[in-house]
Image (tube, rainbow, N blue to C red; front, side, top):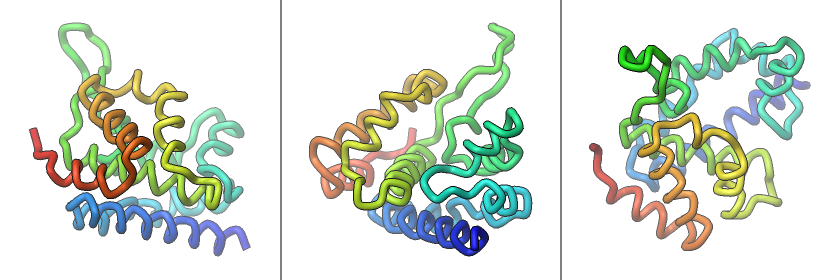
Length: 174
């Protein structure tokens, strides 16, 4: 039963992301979004830790101290800011680098879709920005990436989907 429910959750999420990516003008990103979730390491771990109300990687991480599914996922999906880190020879540290715009657009679509899938009828346009501001992600992103994502999430809250997707489509690559 968990296998079917996990599969349906992935498909539902991909469907929402695809719809958002079409609205954002990045159709190919919507088609290719999260294809790695069907790989054995991500899919089977997802089934094992499926709850239906949050990402299975949270429970996997809580159980084992890390999530192998997440490690695989973030290393193959460029819409995750965690993908965009590199060694800085000046500071001798791994640091965030600025994400290309098309992946920031996809990240926006992904975050909104995740809220819709996991919150269901409780979802509002305020949820994605609240999650973003309440978490630590923005502190671990390149400042320009965090600023742009935050701007779009705030615009979603204040002006709605039509306005934010119009703005996203107008935003050109660096």
